[in-house]
Length: 185
Image (cartoon, rainbow, N blue to C red; front, side, top):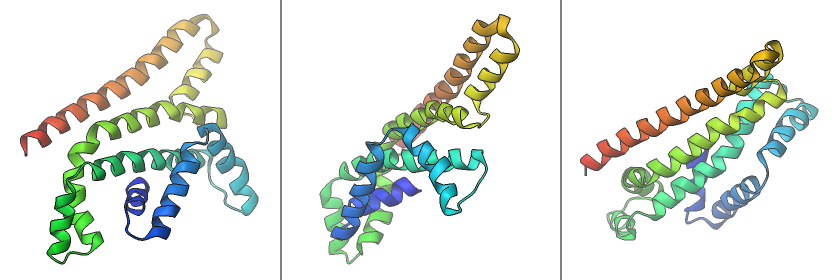
């Protein structure tokens, strides 16, 4: 949702919104995810924002991946024929009505594969949360390798298979979604 809101800001006819959206995306996209995690986990508590490490991980991943989702959605919006928006404006629709009712529904078809790549990256990037005490797949693999030093290779391969299952299932779901939307044209 944050990525879509940012994309709306980036294509907005209001210059301050465009600048704000661009500043967010360029700043976050060019910052390593580990730095975002450090900021969320260590700086936010300094200003009395205290959550569990899991919630901090969700916040950090959301902040970072919202910028990537924004760019995927923005590229989908830019892929819709400009005549569609012009026709909507000629009918008297406002910018938000035009975007919500005309442009975004058409942009969905263009956005499926790029969003799939972003979500796949999100699945893999969640492994950074293990370094901050969150027990996700990589954290579980670390704990199992410590508990079973004689089975390190098997445990690591299990972790790899776990990530493969998640990302390949996502790819299959996206392929199905893309085929259904292609048939709906």
